[in-house]
Amino acid sequence: MNNPDLFIYIITALLPLSAFLLVIQVNPYDALVIRGILGAIAALVYAVLGAGDVALTEALMGTLLAVALYIIAIRSSLVMRLGVLETDLLTLKTEEKDQLFLSLIDNFKSIIAKYYLRLELVSYEDLNNLEKALQEKEVHGICFQRNNENKLYLTQIRIKRLYEIFTRESSNINSNFTYINLLEK
Image (spheres, rainbow, N blue to C red):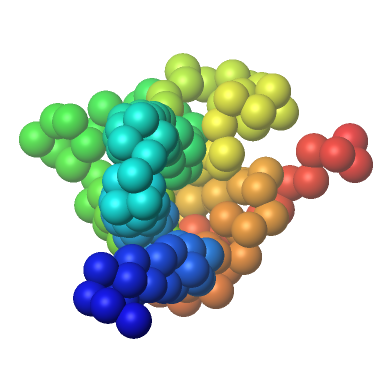
C-alpha cells in the first residue's frame, strides 16, 4: 500500500465519522458547521478520486448552498412568538418600566435561550385580540396580567414542548402557565 492510497482511506474514513457527528448534534448551529465539513470532505474525496466536476458540484451545491439555506431555515424556525398586550409592551419602552413585566420577559428569554430559541414579542391592543391570535396560531403563547391587584401574569402556551420547558424551568417566575390544546377545541 503506497502513501496516496492511505491518504484516500483516511479522507474516506472521515465521511462516516462526520456524518455520525452530524446526527448526534443537539445545537442546530453546530450541526450546520459539521454539515459544511461533511460537504467539504465529500468534495475532497471526489477531487482525489478524479471526479473534478462532481467535486465542484458538491462544493458549490452540497456545501455552500445547502448550508446557506439551512441557516435561513433554522434562523427563522427557532423563534417563540409571545403575544402580549400593547400596554405591557409600551411599559418596556418608556422610562417608567414595569419591573415585574420586565423581569418576566427577561426570565422567558433566559429560559428559551438554553434551547437555542429567540423570543419575539408581538403586541395586541386588547385581551380579545390576544386570545384570538393564540386561537388562530399567530403566536405560540400569550402572556397577560390576570388582575392588577396581585400582579400575577397568566401565560397560555399552545405548543406542548414549550409548555413543558417553561413549567420545568420557571420556579421563580411570577406567572401561572397553562397549556392550551387547540386540537381538542
